[in-house]
Image (cartoon, rainbow, N blue to C red):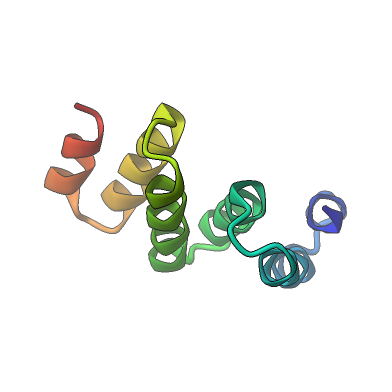
Length: 88
C-alpha cells in the first residue's frame, strides 16, 4: 500500500486517504482494513478503528492479535470492561 510510504514520509492524512481507497478497492480484505485501522489509531480516530476491528473479527474470529488490538482501542475509548473481555 502507498499508505505506508505516505505515513513514513510524515503525511498521515494522505496515508489515511490512500488506505480508505484500498478498502474501497478491495472490500472484505482484512489487510486493507488493518492498514486503515492502524492509521485511524495513529490519528486518534479510535471509534473508526474500532469499527474496522469489529469488521475484521467478524471476517475471521480466530485471529487473536485483532482482539488484543481491539482491547487497546476499547481502553482508549474508556470502555475498560469491554477491553478486559477481549483479553480473556
